[in-house]
Amino acid sequence: MKILVFVEQRDNKLKKSAFEALAAARKLAGSASQVAALLVGGSVEGLAGELKNYGADTVYVVNNAAFDKYNVMAYAAAAEQAIKTFAPKLVLGIASPMGRDIFPRLAARFDAGLATDLIEIKANGDFITGLKPMYSGKVFAELALQNTELQFATLRPNVFKGETSGDGAANVSKLDVAAPASPLQTVEIRKGKSEKVDLTEATLIISGGRALGSADAFKILHEAADVIGATVGASRAAVDAGYAAHDMQVGQTGKTVNPTLYIAAGISGSIQHMAGMRSSKVIVAINTDPEAPIFKIANYGIIGDLFQVVPAMTKAFKELKG
Ligand code: FAD
Image (cartoon, rainbow, N blue to C red; front, side):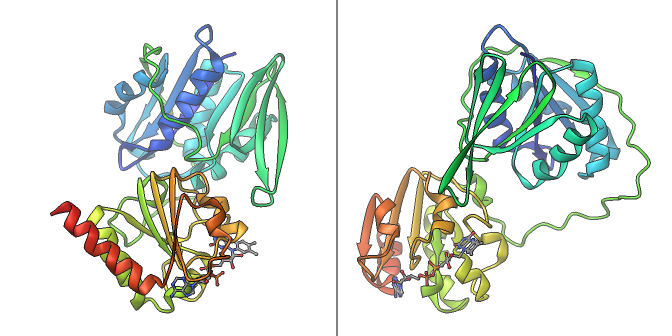
């Protein structure tokens, strides 16, 4: 079963998710089948070698100034050509904003099936089966795609491990694709204000909830985060109340994160919040209410007032670092 992986890059740097999707494809294909990666951008040729250790036998590169800024019409044209060239049975990507944009378009273009946001994917005889959490992880749907025909699937970010396999040879094959004439143009890409590591890629996260009470109070989380190099996140209640920016929201309708350490300060632990952070390796919850649901999934629980606990943590972080 040949698998083509659509790998994502930003500013000509590979996203962590590129390695996750590629490593998952390699595992799924086994050593007998071929895995190819598709890399599209304005100046991405130098990135192809990085994909070798994650199991890519071939890296198709579309490297052209016209592809510098993401445009779904242009990137779909590049993917279409790679699919026609490599003839895979499965095209795999990530359920990121980009993946959610381009994969349905590609599946429609090839009149093929699409399974999205999978947290598990397996080869099962003539089928590829995948597990998809629904209703914030309350139920899991098992989806089956027949692997005798071209199919598409996206994986939930931060769930699969971007492990090196060393199996790939990574022959680089340049594809000459012209960006199609399109009524849709990408004029400008405006980045979020934060200069910190994006939540989806962060290994340390400190998130605040409604209990912070104001945007100003979030300063205590930023102070703690600055000492250990963490990224600050928020619950939806904090975002809706205007205490935190929208791109800081963790959860079902925010970002899915998978850090080594997730500190939840003044967050109750709603199903929707936990849907985005429950796979964090170590969870520390700070809450005045000993019955708060977040304590059910926390590795360490601190029953206390975050306005005392967080500054004390910051002090301890500084002492440890100093
Ligand atoms: P609360 O539930 O109000 O919890 C505040 C907590 O702070 C309480 O547990 C309280 O005991 C504690 N506390 C109070 N004072 C202190 C103090 N001084 N020190 C320490 N602890 C204190 N939510 C998300 O987070 N992400 C999502 O993506 C998301 N998507 C949603 C999608 C849908 C369709 C719906 C319906 C809801 C969604 N929600 C989401 C909202 C979610 O249901 C909750 O309302 C929200 O997560 C609650 O945020 P919170 O924990 O900050 O606030």
